[in-house]
Image 1 (cartoon, rainbow, N blue to C red):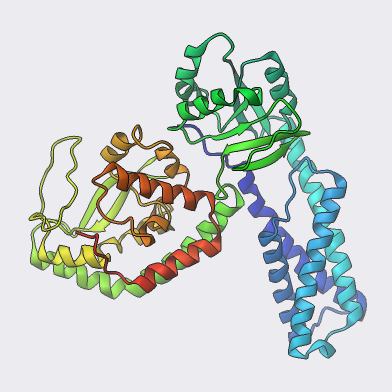
Image 2 (image 1 turned 45 degrees about the horizontal axis):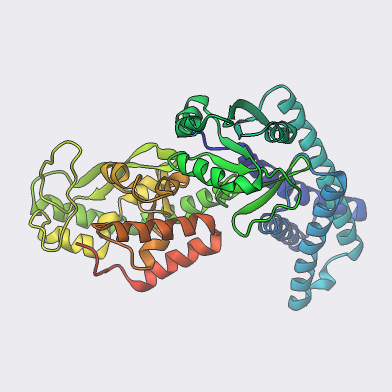
Length: 450
């Protein structure tokens, strides 16, 4: 299904280094001002808080330019973000009326040192990354597709640090090649597909993206003229060329690490809080019916990988034919009395917080479907497999908008997938927290549960 691009996830390292450097510069500035490292307690608090706020500003405003960014761009990035961060903190100090506690010379020195050290550290970091990439490390493998020699030249011109063209596909005069693209992407083991064609031939691009709908690679379109415009998706910049990312999610790279941290914190707190509830449910299941307490089933996780999802067992133990899955219906005799309550209250989902702690699921994301459902719907609902560009979730945008429960019609599944893809394309930490709060606000009970 293609490799998930993990190169940009290296941005998680600079953010922690930056916070540490900012804090160290605060202590160094104090030494230059007063000749000692014995700081009063409120200076420690100032340095700690300001360092975290600056790190947060860097995250929110995406203050990490790409490795091939120009000197001026890097300078502007860090100067503007450092000034913004310290300005916010200074306004907070004025509001709290504690500015008289701190030396203005010390603060000015801290700002200057922080900027200079951060700028120098990132210059060294980019040089180190460039050196590693020159040796063939930290590279993303790419498959290129074109139908003209100009397209081939354009794609080779775009190739830059961090990317390596693994395979080229020429569609000129061979329409049958397009039908085998998915297999070629899989066999090449690439993480991205780059397409370059005349914009007037965009119908071919649409056909290519359709053929690759079951893959999970990032897809970029590099137009062959300078004034290309597209209303949707993201336009990025690669070595003097604009690319239109036809398959892109904000949950790549650093944002994926932020979401993982969110999951670990919330899942740990929730798991500790619901331990008594889980023990009561487990005992009730054991006493009310024969069979295991937990129900385990294979589902597709991120990247199409098969994972084991846990739930409290809500049905009587039964067996189904191979490759057959019967969804629960209203009044389904297989569902026990206790199980009906667990399903309607969503309490049967509590063991999935263990899946979250394992890293196989997320608290918020597209709900995982049974394997047979994926095989059935992936050819009926276009872009169905793009749901697997992120980890499946316990709750999601589709669920809080009424698309929870049975998906026994194509229309229901299409609407669920549409909402899932909207979530993936518009992800933010705020959106995750909003979905969690709405899920709690609406309550556990839902009319669509069986």
